[in-house]
Image 1 (tube, chains in turn green, red, blue, cyan):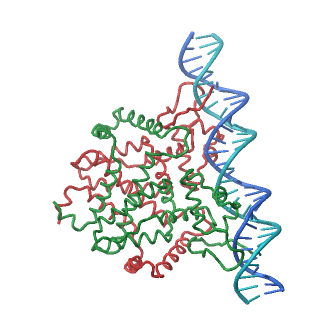
Image 2 (cartoon, chains in turn cyan, red, brown, yellow):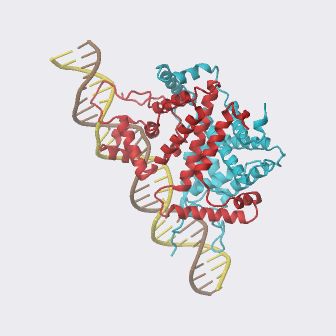
Image 3 (spheres, chains in turn blue, cyan, yellow, brown):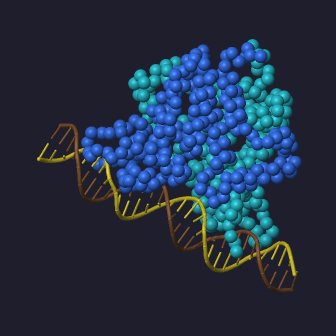
Length: 241
Length: 241
DNA sequence: CCTAGTTACGTACAGCGTACGTAGTGCGCT
DNA sequence: AGCGCACTACGTACGCTGTACGTAACTAGG
């Protein structure tokens, strides 16, 4: 009686190795690395059970011994890139440290442009996610607010980083493997946007468009957003000029 | 020579109706409504070209006359729920107005729990999205900052609303059509999280967990996040006690 | 040693997006 | 007026997906 579990499974809760049977040919890390490699090189849509299995050099269905559902494969991928976080020694300046964390997260997402899309759908707490959370709390040690407020700060900041970086990646690279170029698609979208604004139906939007000169500096916009979020949590902020 | 366009298409740029040929049996609004109905009742995964066509009572491939790619169907859906925004008369109090907008957006997403997932992947500017943007700018008229800063405020606020509501929906309702109950899955996840925290590997995280008593008030957390974002943009904020 | 639990994997199925071909319809142009 | 073409409609088919299920080989615990 093999029987599938009638209860939801958290992949991190099931042991990687149980006593009986032949030794598994791969570790979870192997599988995660293969999936990440495929996603980096051929896009997230290329991450299918078949392709990952092929990358590992095993049969498709063998993968299901390690990863009961595809969703779990995604969790492995998120955990894998979570290992790339730089867990530095906190300096005592919580603002600077959190900025560094945010830029670090952004850099990781830039290396793995599929990450924001995955983060939106997976809510698990993987080992590396927990480690990163703990690190953030360590950075926030000097900040004198309740622990609940700190976790809210982390959540808000992470949300902003994800949202902004997802948008930037979208405008810069757009979905991969399109028959037309990125520039072309963006041009079409901007042309449409311009034509709509030109109808006069959106006067304030038009004014905002007129005001801006030259291309937007995405990096600067991002940093400003971070600073604003940090301001909102900074007890010293009110006293500043 | 029918020939597909070798250039990206923005569905809003292509006219809904061109002169020639038989009258289309449906409008875009019909199609969007059908897709939204399916997503509301049976979940986003049930929104397939086949199902939408069936809901409309036409052949699957006929749908492609109206919606060249499935991605465009998603854009129609987002635009459709964008019509649910309450475009009230600005009161002159930009903070209160923007709070109202945020709560309004949150309410829409709660009615259509698939919305956050879609928003993460679609970046178009649909008619109703533009209308809502214009409305927000109208609400921000009393705020004396550059237009660019206003659009940044709107973007940041919308991002926070989407992120937070997506998370809340996930914990409250989780993916639909699971063989186990929501409570069960959350219980399993929390049990795992608790077991990890109990290992002592995450002391600060453990402390944060200890600190909290009783269940988290998601609404309060959400409102606090909004207030913080608004604080960060409020010129009067520094002068307050 | 035996056997239960595991690994490995081929086959099969339902469902997906959508390319393509064909038939019918009615507006615009000559 | 009527020709032609752009459009609607839709059936069929292809390649792909996740994964249920069955079978064979293997190994550690009792």
